[in-house]
Image (tube, rainbow, N blue to C red; front, side, top):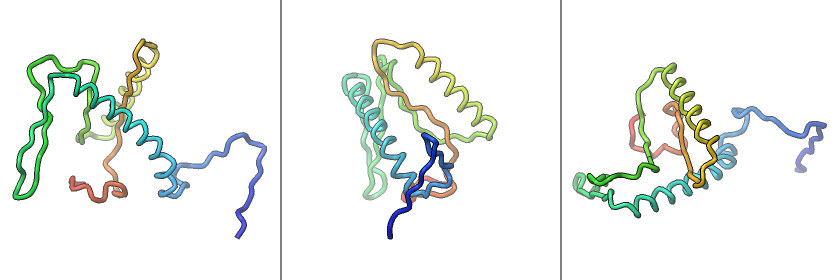
Length: 141
């Protein structure tokens, strides 16, 4: 069946995010997200590897499991690197305020135009009601 062709005088087609099928949203957005996330993780790993302040502790968990823990020594850590991923309990007004403050902080530093390039990730999002990508995640809902 031939694909319909649409013409418009506009230079941009605007589609509400929710009107795009989920699988297409994942394809469109996650490719870009994963590129920058992987670049961020590469830079983080390089910085940590160059520091003597970090070790990784391995221990048994249960009969066949294993746990890993990042251990930071007493030596000075990396002041130009941070990596915090966590789930925290907030009311909606606090989550909104946190997101606004993070946005303002990112804008403040983005305007400085320093000599070195850093990759920054900052985000606030509610716990998903539908677990699509994270369906196999053992973390509680």
